[in-house]
Length: 304
Image (tube, rainbow, N blue to C red; front, side, top):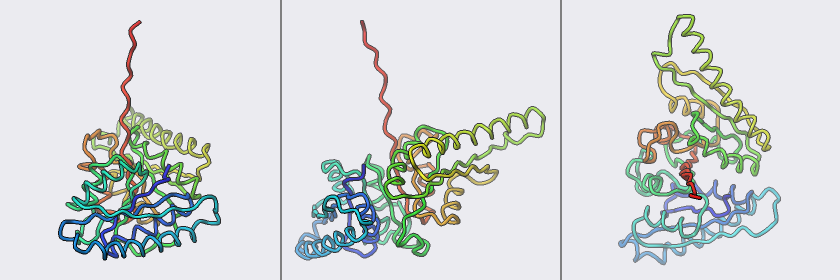
């Protein structure tokens, strides 16, 4: 599933924080890695310098991936690089499509010095344009390297929609391949009209609570049957929102990664804007795997 990993770089150490994750995933899953650097017109005169830089990074990345392969020896881990020119986001998206990349791993802050995760930077533009899964690593301002040297726990928020569950096939894959611990998380944000003290109102409230608890337990059972080490957490939220609870859960639970769909029940046609994913992207500090739900095929009828 993730046999081809694309890692955009810009020559900065901040962008290189992605390499540790790419090396770990490629080492365990025997994935091929392509390092991609997009030059602007003013950078073209320094192409030779960037070429030397990428050759050295490629050599180091390959060695580290092999070292972290956990004893797996089947097949060589291929690591190469490409240098393109043009608009960085457009070239990244186009290359990912042409090369049939399965996963893009990006730093949310590189040479541009943008302080917030996805506001006006290349990562934001790539997120809006690509249909590929994207793993975002916050390069600055994140919590200390608590996830460094280990990738063990993944938090997976679901909201009851099929769109939010699009992430599950990817989580199942990486969890079984890397032996990760998965925590499903469902935050029920109760509205003011849900709060009632009548007998009938309390009955409806309990029924709604049981439906939601049953929902996340069914997903847990389904993943366990596929060999995933999984548990689930259901939480009622009376103030605030689901995104705030996801961020809090990720921070306090010491998770290595949050994995979620880019939109869920809201049904927004555009990525990120207004969704819980955008809020987690902006305010969270844990590495974030985002997957765009695949469009459902419309059923067609054949005339006899």
